[in-house]
Amino acid sequence: MPLWEKLLEILQLNYPQKISFVELIEKSAHSQEQVQHTLQQLLQQGFPIRISGNQLSLSFPLLSKRAISQKIKTHHLAKKITLFDSIDSTNTYVKEHLATIKHGEVFLAYEQLKGKGRLGRAWSSPVGKSISMTLVLKPESQIQNASLITQLTAASVVKALEQTVDTKIKWPNDVLINNKKIAGILTEAAFSGGTLQGIIIGMGVNTNLEKEDFPDELLNKATSIRKETQMSIDPNQFLRAFFTQFEALYDDFIANNEPKTFLTTCRTHSALIGKNMWLIDGKKQRKVFIRTIDSAGGLVVQDLKTGQDETITSTHYSIRGEHSYV
Ligand code: BTN
Image 1 (cartoon, helix red, strand yellow):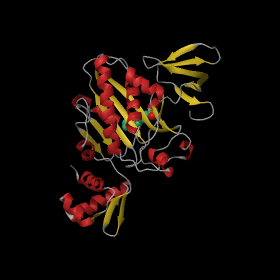
Image 2: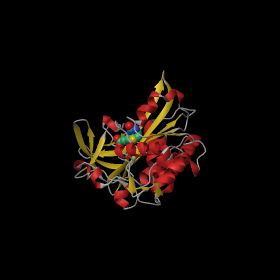
Image 3: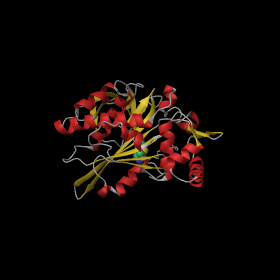
Image 4: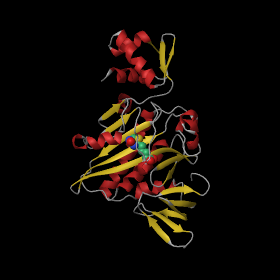
């Protein structure tokens, strides 16, 4: 394990207590100079490390492979975790290395420099304040469509946060608190000669971002769990709960070839059902009433001009509220 990761892990395992510089050096088993140099780099990168006198602590909890693995209850997911300090995009990395990656492997980053969102948008993940995660699935049989896996992921986020805060899903891939986005999901299926090589599930969760981390134009659309709950969120605890929920829903889906369980959560926690919304397709937009999510995961809408019902299955649409985000 590189020294930067070791130092962050020691600080994380000690959170919220302080640790003395001397103890940190001892625990890291490196020289004073090496520790000092690496700490300086971490501070420059923007990690939330507080120093008072010769004591150090984290301002809020950070990702740690050990903290996730130690108490995780899954059987086949997140058994191997890779954590990057900084990377372009965990999804891009996984795509480039898919052949050597096994089912259930997880890739995390403290910071992404070129995070990708849906519809070619950028996804910002400031250092240590959000979760940038990619999970790889290599199912033995074909999966009907990637959008179902997106909805399974969204349902797992809702369930993982159930004890902490009420969340809603903006079909198919956004998770909201108080009508603002806290998490986005980007699922990509990789094929080679018609055969599925793997499903790449990218998820960004705004855990501990503060008001000043959001550009003004996003303040009425995006938020963080910390901003909405006034609590520091432990990303490791969240991920343990998330992987446990995901595995249960995924195993059930694969065993029964039936998305009913997670689609029920998507329906009961929908931020859209029963509302009039704008359905946006590139430059065209029309007003629709959102009826429900059907048994295959499609969004059933009524066109308010024609009165006709239709089912939206493609995820290249954007959906916006009449006057606000939802
Ligand atoms: C969206 O809401 O448009 C989807 C956002 C997905 C962001 C995550 S962060 C981890 C993974 N790596 C990426 O580059 N994107 C996904």
